[in-house]
Image (cartoon, rainbow, N blue to C red; front, top):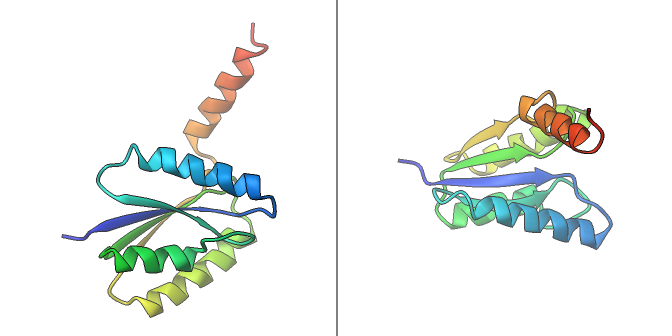
Length: 124
């Protein structure tokens, strides 16, 4: 049986308040997932990094790490940069299974949220 850890990976920002808001949101999500540890990480422009949090979860005994890419669209970070980071982490931790979840692009739940928001403030 694998002990699972989860990382919500955001882009990051130079603005400290953005990092604090992202970290708080991940904390709220974590409070709803009892079966795994959930940590925030930043692709760039912030700490902790993806590698920092993977190392933390490994120290905590996790052998399976789920990475949720908290990005709206599949740009160069998703298609090139993050896969390179994950490849390096797989080499560093060959005994750890990495599960990479897709971005929010084309997610029906996000589309439902947009419809709900639009209708709440102007729908007939």
